Image (tube, rainbow, N blue to C red; front, side, top):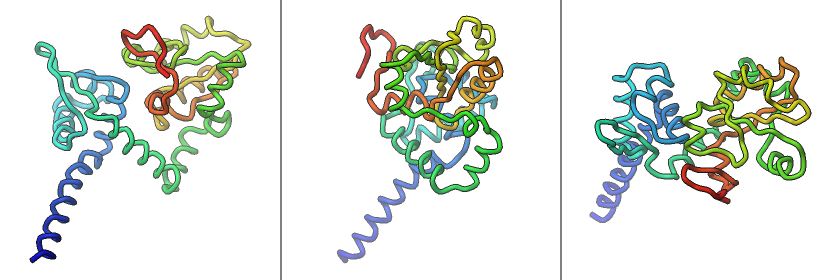
Length: 230
């Protein structure tokens, strides 16, 4: 009887865990989670950013809510979605790392579609911190301004990709330019690197994005905060 009870309990545990895994089991839901790691968003904003219908976006968000991966808060008639807990990021980071080390197809895709990463190289957090303290470096956040205002690397300048070309003449020619966006597989930073490199700037891409920087406890600036969080 004890063994039977134990077996039923174990099956129920894995059933509950599998319901959480369902939330991660779709490419659109993974992208939604990455977007929500940048800050809270409405259904309309998420749909527009992903270029899918509001109905489809809403369906995916309901699955994420059922899996307890996101929560929603209403402000008047507007519903704002957010990541439910910081450990959701931990699972996504583990998935990113697993993909980098175990998926040959992913590495091939990256080399084929984003050749600048190998050609120009990427910069890691430790190197960027050292350069920010001892050398001339200009850090650009090329995410949309809404995401920048929700939180960004301390000292970074907002330069949304859509307006980066118009801002290029204001960037320091003598400094190293480091650009970052949403995460290791976000392509906004890659497009910015391509643009600035073609304009003759010394530019490199940060290997990770703002959520990873924040999760490491590195200096950030957040809404309503006068001081830098460390």
